[in-house]
Image 1 (cartoon, rainbow, N blue to C red):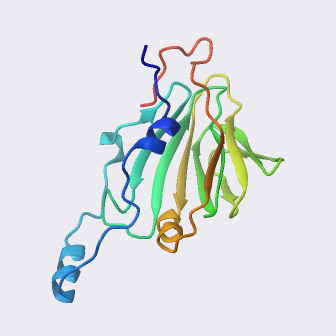
Image 2: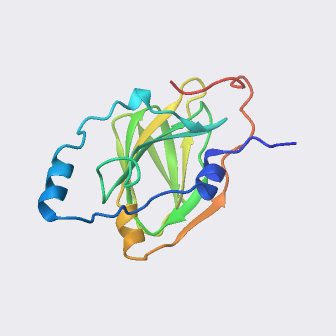
Amino acid sequence: MVKNRTMVEDRAVEDRLFVRAMAGKYEELVETLATEPRVFHTKEMPNTGGPVFFGKDIMSPGKNSTQAFHVHIETIAPGGRSQKHAHMNSAVLYILEGKGYEIHNGERLNWQAGDVAIVRNGCVHQHFNTDPDKPARILIMKSKPLFIFFRILFQKGIERPPDKPLPGWENWKPD
């Protein structure tokens, strides 16, 4: 029997590009970089994962013109939570919608739409959606590709997100 895989499990085993090669004549590279898209239509990008915690990759070296940043949107089902994990790179979390809290190294930090939360380097953290009726969406920006390029590689999953939907939300998926 094949088990449904979570976003965290998929990201752990899929091939990903963290730093892309930039080789060639300088003038050609400048021209190539200058013509890359500068607007990305995120509604067309798929969400992965589930059934409680979903992710949408927006920008990364393997996907588009960025070389130094990884930007993604995490959506947490009503009443749900993310995985508990840690990584060396810091992260900026902009709360797009919802209300909830973070646990950072054991400390609870409440947030709501419009707030910004900072995950410090090496912090064990987890995101929680406290609204029983609405999803929480978080835009996450980090310089993870630079940390990997400089061989500061530590990242550790500690607790996976739920692999079963929450009661009443069995067929829910983000927009």
